[in-house]
Image (tube, rainbow, N blue to C red; front, top):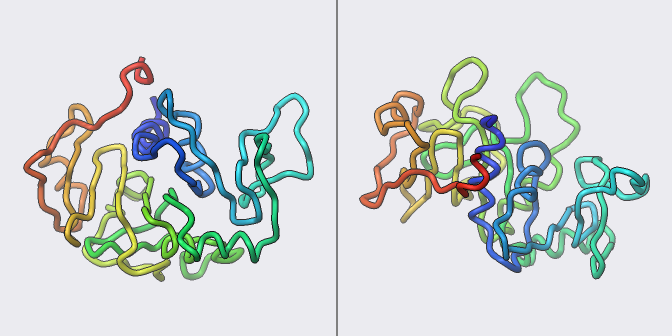
Amino acid sequence: MSPKAFIAKRVALELKDGDVVNLGIGLPTMVAHYLPDGVDIVLQSENGFVGICPADEENPDPDVANAGGQPCGIIPGGATFDSAFSFALIRGGHVDACVLGGLEVDQHGNLANWMIPGKMVPGMGGAMDLVTGSRKVIVAMEHCAKSGASKILRSCTLPLTACGCVSTVVTELAVFQFINGQLTLTEHAPGVSVEQIRQKTEAEFVVSSQLREMLVMEQELS
């Protein structure tokens, strides 16, 4: 199983039946494929949809695309509207959870995920609104950059998306929750020790007294 698939499967367990959820581009879009039985969510897209779903691969509608420009479908009962109304939903606190990728997260709950200085950036998109308007902010990312450097830091070095916004961080090695404002290790991946996680994490964190192995549906691991 790829690290990204493992992360997406664990993130799926954070979502509850009936949640209105925004999934960011890239890894977060995989989450919708791994929802547990009995959990149905309503997917919101900041370009003006609620109720989006995967595109019909045999007959995709070229006029329906998510915020990342990927073809998608819309479920019966879904709705379309303009961008102003879409952001009113987000800013009004009507999105239960958003799942985003991350370039950096730090021990203070800050997130940097929208730009790397010196590289071309198409725009910040809806990330800044989503992380401040959603009730729960889940960052789904690989634990380290391609260089091997930790992406979970004492303090972010890249331009911030928002301050103190992150609720949960899920990587292929661990799950961290911000509990009473403190970065807390709550789950470790199978076969991964706390010491190994410390070696790959620059940030200071505490270990939960209820630390457990990461929850991922057994049937999805076969």
